[in-house]
Image 1 (cartoon, helix red, strand yellow):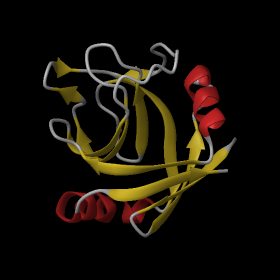
Image 2 (cartoon, helix red, strand yellow):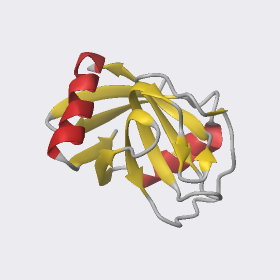
Image 3 (cartoon, helix red, strand yellow):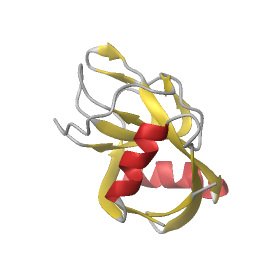
Image 4 (spheres, one colour):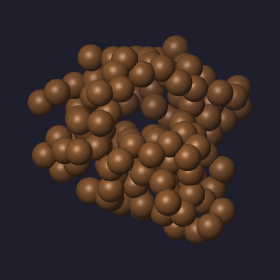
Amino acid sequence: MKTIKIEAGGYSFQAKLEEGLAPKTCALFLSLLPYKERIIHVRWSGEGCWIPLGDTDFGVSFENATSYPAPRQFILYPGGYSETEILLAYGGVNFASKMGQLAGNHFLTIIEGQENLAELGRKVLWQGAQDIVFSL
């Protein structure tokens, strides 16, 4: 099991890659590491934070896709009807855009630090964009 270290908004998390369920998405994500971005609160999906990636085309299609990621799960929306993005659920999420419901590839699950996940979500909601760094 490969794990990824995540630092976001002053909190630390450890997550496992879901290589058996989303091998192409995981391989893509590993190729991006270390990856630093900013995370903002979702607009339509509920209790989640996202990294908007515009029209980036990573060349992956749907695998292990869900519209309802559980808290602790990261999904990658590969683009198409809405912009490409990475989303982290910290509570109830119904993944959507202004066009309607979407589905994204569940590829990463937080396994340590989840007790701080809701607080990270509230911090992003009330204090705005936060730095996020993914590394091995």
